[in-house]
Image (cartoon, rainbow, N blue to C red; front, side, top):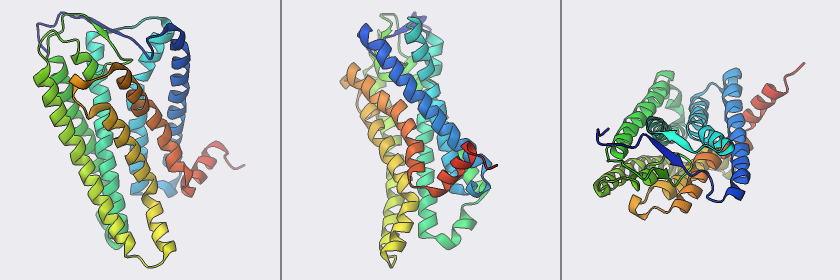
Length: 307
């Protein structure tokens, strides 16, 4: 970080600019956060406990749920506590840590979803070799690569944001430390940093998305060649939940981040972040449990143990 930075703390505006809406919006966000927390922790516990759910698909899903817990927890508790206590202050280094943690978790999830698409592609395109190729070691390596890649991108993104000179004002028009509203506070010219961050982020997101689309193109081409509507539907149903989560993740994420900081709108930024960082992680457990009989049975065993 630059030694010229004179700001030692930032002020977060919170979920709403209007005081009368702050309590309502904070209560709503708290409810959604607790729902996401309970849903994802339940999935982790159910899959850990049930030996029938120790396949690669559920291993990746367990890691996805863990990432959802981590990246919502990186930003939401601080925003809720600040809102209820009437304090909007976050220290400079706490802000740095929050941005790094959030970007690392989000980008790791992006890479993990790509690995999950590859897993489903192998299961459908090469079912006879699936058990050999998708070994425990490969599953663990794919998850580790997702985490390391996310950490490397988060380091770049954090340094790119906080290498600018911040001398005041220090009011962030957001409910957490996000790069676009922070860069708008810079006392130095942030154009180059904005363009570089947008280009690198766009390449990474679009690259991961392209790999995911390629996997699903192969999946669809394989399903089309399967004889019998019942067999085709059974094959597609094994990846329909993942496809839904991918669409939720990329649609909400691209709305929030695939645009230059110069075109940033505070209101749109907060709304997009609510969908991206809170609603999507809360919907993921619902999506995966809605049609998955094995998950439903595992959750029933977890919450209603047999006598």
